[in-house]
Length: 262
Image (cartoon, rainbow, N blue to C red; front, side, top):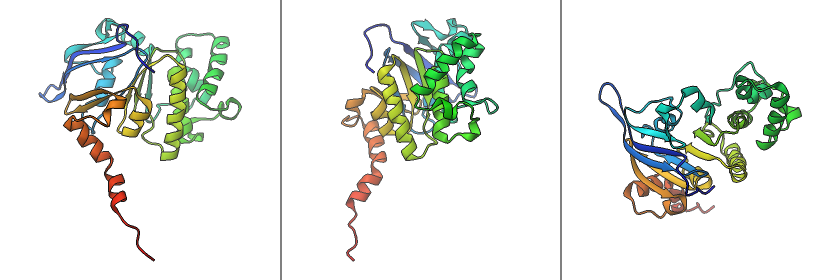
C-alpha cells in the first residue's frame, strides 16, 4: 500500500469551500495523495473530512483552488465519467433495496452496458474477494443481509468497474466492534492484493493506523497534521497529541483503577 514516485493520484491545490453566507468549511487545503497509497482523514465532526472526500468525485465543488484526479482538474472531467472511474463506499452502503446482492454488485457494470456474459463471472469473482459465498448470498435482498454483509456487498459494487481510486466515507462506522474488526481485516488483505489508491474518512484512530499508510488530521477546515501512519502516535504536534489523548481516555482511566478486594 505504498505510493509511487509518479504524479499523485489525487491532489488538492489550495482547495477551499466557503458557503454563500461566508462560513468557511475548508480553507486552503494543499495535499497530495500518492498513487497506490491508503490515506486516512481523521478529525472531529465538522472538521471537513467528508467535504474534502466529496470534492474528489465532484459531489461538492470547491469555491477556491482546484482538485486534481490523475493529473487532471476535476472541472475538466465529465462528472459522470469521473464518478464511474472512482469506487465510492459509504456507511449505509446505498444498496438498491429491490435488487438482490448479485444485481447490486453488478449494477455499475449493467449501467455501463456490459454484456451479461461479462458481468456474471465478474460478480462471482467479487463475491469471493469480499468473503461472501455466492450460492448463499447472491439472491438475498439487502434487508435479508446483516450490516457487515451489506457493507461487503457495497464494497464489491464499488470495486466492480476496477477503479484505480476508492473513496470510503466511514464505511464501518455503523458496525459492532467485532464485525468492524472482521471488515477491517478483509479490507486490509484486499488492499494488499489490489493496486488501489484509497482515501478513507474515519473517526477511529485504530482503524486509521491499521489500514492507512498516511494519516491527515483536519481541524476547523484546515490540515493540522499530515504524517506517515507510523509517525502519528509519537508526533509532538499539539493537535495530534490532543486527538490521541482523547482517544486513549478510557484506556488510561481503566489502567488507573484498582479492582476491589472481595
